[in-house]
Length: 597
Ligand code: M6R
Image 1 (cartoon, rainbow, N blue to C red):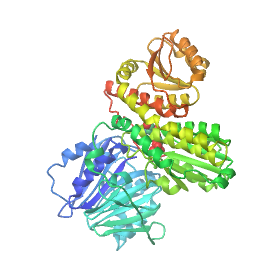
Image 2: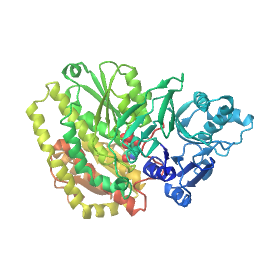
Image 3: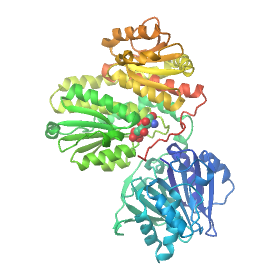
Image 4: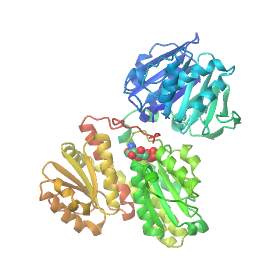
């Protein structure tokens, strides 16, 4: 959460603002930038709201060579200019931006206040810059002051510091990701590897508990613990043009990209060994699929398919609940950490703990070079391309596809399913991108009609059985996430155990019924609901009872319905957001990467 960007180049302010705009999905309640002027003074511009407000406020400033900036997702202190980053040290020497949470900031703040430091914000982050100010005079080399500061900070941090006395930017990393980008035209830093693609192709991944000096000549990394130089691990990333992805209605265009993303993911994963080999497969006694939010919903579907095909104990676990649920991992455990961003703190922490207990960890992620790719023993990379909207759509579709292919390949490796059968499933995949395409092309009028109904409903319930229930959960999360309509998801059979009491006029139930075998039961459920005055909309490839509205989807191999049937639900959520005047790309209170626990 929060985004950090910095640049050392000919027009560092302009590049930093571009970087912040790309990072805005990480937090968007306020933003700010610090520059070093030609007279070596630090100048701050901060605004409440979007990066565009900072862009407007910095119009006309001369070009500078050094800048750092920040987009905020508030954790400590209300949303206001005073609490926006960067923070300036009281003596004006340092400007600092921070992503993460400093656990001991109250103690440090008290100690510094006693020494006469005056704080201007309510944040934990400001403590870091004032602490650095008090350390700087104690050392000949600013690097020693920075490592001393870092050692006193408890908690998680990705920090970038602009120093008016030197021509370097200083970076500190513990717990939160931080990357540097090196190019002929400038050097950069970012809390998000994807953002750097727009500026350079060579990206360095800072180590955990590391400190880095970045200047126009390059970067040097040191250990915070003992000061020794650490080699920087560089990766080459595919560069991108700035205007291609950086504007427009991201959620809608990302839904439209699903057919292409699925095809790319399928082509990549079916030509890559993504499963354990036979001897390892036979040693695995238990599989945990872990993730949060939407990624967890793909885990639920993946677990269902692994259970169905692979004869192994498997469970989908909310990564945020790992610590509270008495799960155990050992050397016979395979953990698959599913995370679009590869940066979700809850997922990373649970994955690290499983590794510590001896498990093998696989990662399903959409971001090459993200933190999870360094935690995992093996990486299964989905090919959804950069996803900017906070609501995950195309990445979710690709996660479900990846786990479906994983289940089939795992079963094949264990000899539990014939290769011909796997080949048939794969052959049937080719109809899926076309089917999604036809929902996108033809569904508009129907989806508009249903969105109108939903956006006026006092509550919306999503129901389904089997994998349809997991799709219901994802549809419900998407709707509330972007349109703020109250919504819940239930296994259809659970309605009569309590929730039926809520059915009355003004309530809408969205049923997902893709399994032909459960259609008769769904029909009975529809009667139970409509006879109590609520409306029902069914997403299905089949005929539905007269009393319910229908969103028809094409027929595909049943194994692919979770990928297809979620698309109208994503569109519904988007359209409800638009009808209700909500910003679907940047829903209130949320951020794309949840890097705090
Ligand atoms: O990056 P991750 O896949 O680990 O993110 C996990 C969740 O925070 C994420 O899926 C969240 O639920 C989305 N905003 C849902 O659209």
